[in-house]
Image 1: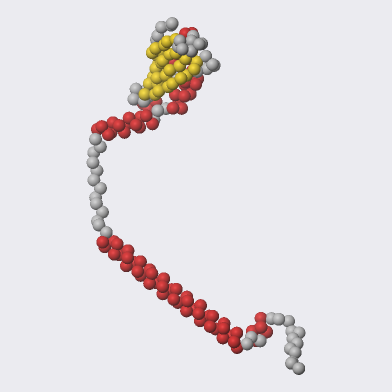
Image 2 (image 1 turned 180 degrees about the vertical axis):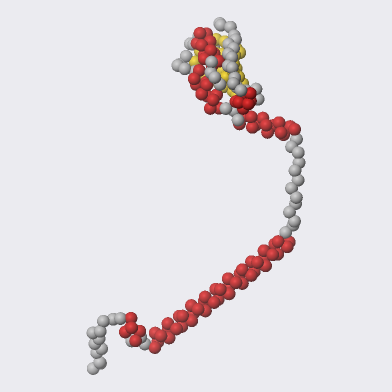
Length: 199
């Protein structure tokens, strides 16, 4: 009959270590030795990699061409004019233009068909349709009364015979004030010009 090991003592760390077999201790020692060896090898490998990286960087710097000095060339007059024209087109005061046009275009009596700003001349050209000449002249008066515009001019008008309602199509030009120049010059008086003939 084989001896039976009966152990009623509670399991503790000290008891587990005391009852460990020598093979277990040997396996733990071998594992620690392997971990230490791997750490040493990793450190050596990292040191060698940094050494080779430093050598590579030094070789790159040594063989790199010297940076060329930047030279400034004057911008040709044509190119400067084109750039200034583009900047002027981008700096059109759209918010004030739309606000003034929307304020003048009240009700359903005017149909605004097209607007084209000319930033160099501070002029807005537009095409609209009205039911009759009174609505057209009233619109031009309201447009000229907007504080953003210095004047508004009716440039042409004609009756659209192709449309069964025969609306009055007209073109106008309104000049807006130059905010930057006027801010330096002082207050501005607003004048309105309504030109054209009634059909």
